[in-house]
Length: 265
Image (cartoon, rainbow, N blue to C red; front, top):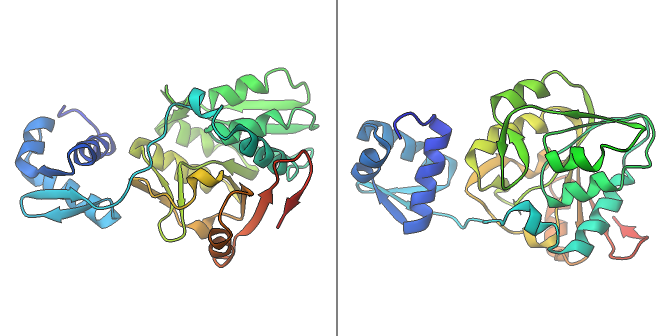
């Protein structure tokens, strides 16, 4: 495994530490075919990011991790909540805008509520989103290139990131596997983190869509501080104290009801 790029190696190291709770530098060096000096540098970087804690001769896990099933399974989980969030997000999109819709089950529902919009341009790295919008005659769909993450049906990596630099966007709609008042937005898949950060930097307005099951969770890889988000849309089961913590960081909060109409701010 000596040919792994750095981010892939970091992800594999995290997987080892998450599974066993700890790892020894020498064992990691032999497993990955690199020097102990390289492994020590990797562990120091993971320590600096707050994902592990250095210990004598290795490292131990330091935070909880949010692990998600593949998207095809998540689409049916908390379905009513996600649909309510999606309707609220779609209501913020104006005809004629250029927007980005990211991967994830909640973002996928947003796409389904945009089909009646006019003269809309939707840029996406989610294959399922592009399929859902394929027959919408008044929507121009732009699909990024990149390496496919099969379980997420998303395109990530340097090709996707380079493609993003070629588009101008009014709004970005993204989901997240974990959102915490202190840790911010985190992800459990390191190779996707740089792509996520590039996405967040492509528009003036960032709309985060996440149901109550994502709130208060911390995954292994830091993506962005919570105040990078302009609007957070969630469902009525999200604890009020969590919502107040989000508002305290200057983020607009929209709580979508499970009914066909109605939302609170």
